[in-house]
Image (cartoon, rainbow, N blue to C red; front, side):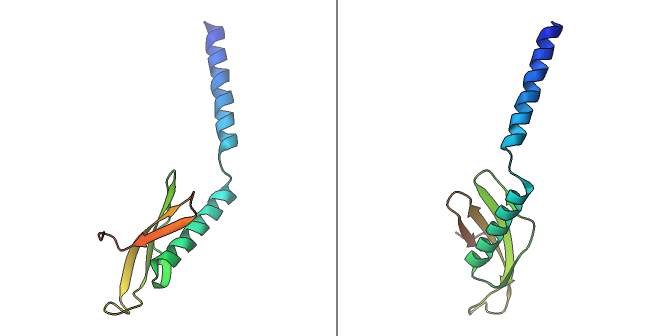
Length: 101
């Protein structure tokens, strides 16, 4: 019984080590975050865009909240809050004002 428990424990440690080896480095996550932020700020089309909150990483997308200034009438010059999804596989961002189709 003790042998089975030790074997199972060793298997768990090996699996955990393999999982850690597959994980991305902190530099890779920082690079992905920077790409998502830049793509989302550009996709918003807002003047003076900036990231409103830290991005949220999902399996296939990164969620980014962007704030900035409306560039065109009738809202020109007013503050705007947009939401954006950055698609990791397509390396593309889609942004829109929240609550609108």
